[in-house]
Length: 139
Image 1 (cartoon, rainbow, N blue to C red):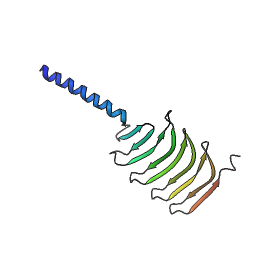
Image 2: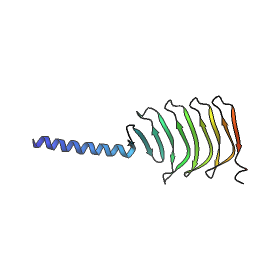
Image 3: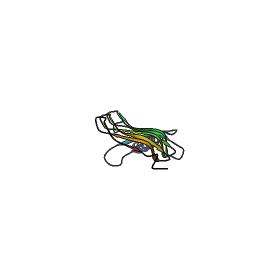
Image 4: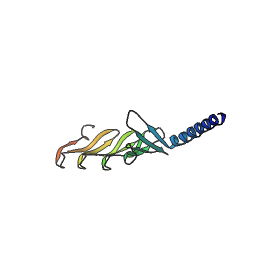
């Protein structure tokens, strides 16, 4: 009996060490019934759809944990849904969002987290719906 208890305690210790090693490299969050997997290593951030077969988000985090550089969101099919660039947490630069069929929904640029320049919105077949120039709105 003492041998059995000793083996169970030893097994529990080994399992907890293995679990701690895994969580240092990949964090598993379970907000409800769905599984969300996030990898974050040296600032590279990747979030996976359940089952870990397809990326959901990919980007870079600065030392303060803010988005920095190019961030891409993917659909479960693997198609790119959107891309936006950040500078230390603020939207800065080109941004594009697509419909689920791959056609561009809108595109434009940010400067200091505000829309700037020409922003264009399209319908689901790619026809221009609106064009708005935000440069004149911030001057």
